[in-house]
Length: 445
Length: 162
Image 1 (cartoon, chains in turn yellow, cyan):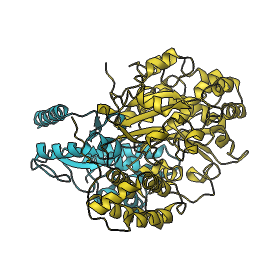
Image 2 (cartoon, helix red, strand yellow):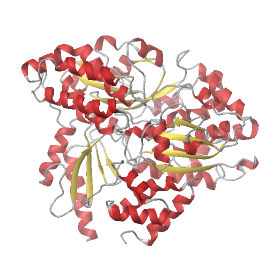
Image 3 (cartoon, rainbow over the protein chains, first blue to last red):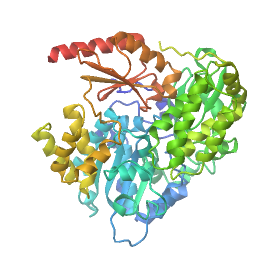
Image 4 (cartoon, rainbow over the protein chains, first blue to last red):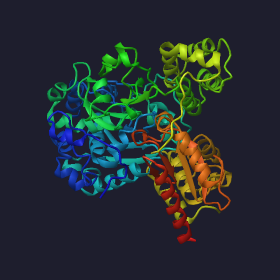
């Protein structure tokens, strides 16, 4: 039996390690079934939490472990759960954000396809911690196989009594709905996701109120990423102190990194936080070096919204603080590698086209600004750039950054600003000469 | 009526699970698209009647999301990811190759109504680039030989079903 997606993982390394844990069974073709998941110790944490712990203890354990959101923002998960108002008569909701669509990011998909019960178990524990009895997973609609896989897993979880009424005889009821999206990147932003789940257009909401106070159906709601939730059972099983011993002090634990672009071995790899970016790209266990043994031009370390790094900056650790220190971000952990043949203007045109297309249209700076940016960058890319265009781009960027309700505007701007900072001469050359400094033409095999 | 009784029943069942009816709109649009292959105002009206929400709310949602084509498309909707990770691995040349193989331009449908070719935003298959989605399935790590085989298989499948 083969996997639906042929993506490469480091499951073997993870299985041999007593520190890495998320990817331990992702190369087992039966791991998606409840029987195999249980045989591998699955649902033990859920049972432990539900039958031996108080909800506050569960939240405290996750808070103490220092787990931070793996969707991109890196917000402490246990702290987020603590924002649910005590004694509110309204129902509480837990929503798992499986709208994975940040370019470069393809990690949650692997969990859902190959180890869906890990997500479901983490969701159940999170739901219990906040007093939720109806939880949702919002999966992007294009994800045919992850949707099929999660639906099968939910059905099995009900059949085995991990979900439903009076779970493990505790008197606790928990239901789960699998909701599929309609194809909109913005719905990965939590307030847009909640609007979408309510059947509305996926447009961001002004905060406050934050979702923990007024989220889904104006009730207290927690939105967590797939990988974040899939990590929770491990923390409950092995304890906060164990989890804190992994990774770095302020960035504890491990994380799945999606590696794409010009590397010999693209794939999804679980690493402890703080792992060297350079090692990740060049180590034969992971990226194995640059495709065709070309020179490295640049790296986007955390998904397409994060600022570029140049080859002299890649000795950095893959963790929240280290990447912030060098002017970028960990984001979703999607490392995109560019070789020397990549024209930076061409690359930015690909990126800005995406953000222009995905802008929800609610805030003027983002709606209009991303359109202007695409026009300007397209003109330069096609050899129609005019003197002063780089400055104009910088000005438009400055008028978007920090002036929108949600981070999509910032996400569109940050890679552009960093690319101008790092390769200004190349932008200028494109305008002055009407062509690339390097020839970009990537043929598929 | 464009929607079958089975689809209407499914929409009602899905909607009943949510605390609020409006949440049934996206599931209903998905069911309608899977049955009809596209959506339009007649379908919005049928959905609105089926799950008891105002038609305008269905139209509002349908026109926001890209996954519900508003015009008929070919039996196989080929969507090539053209975002950065795929572009670095030759997505532009993949689109050109498909244009040449199918004898159409991006955005068009073949005269036999079998294939529609479009390029789309990131599909979350970045570490197995380049890739394309055809109807509900992903095809990853594409090469020219693989594309040839996929198209041939789909033509055979369509012939067998005809």
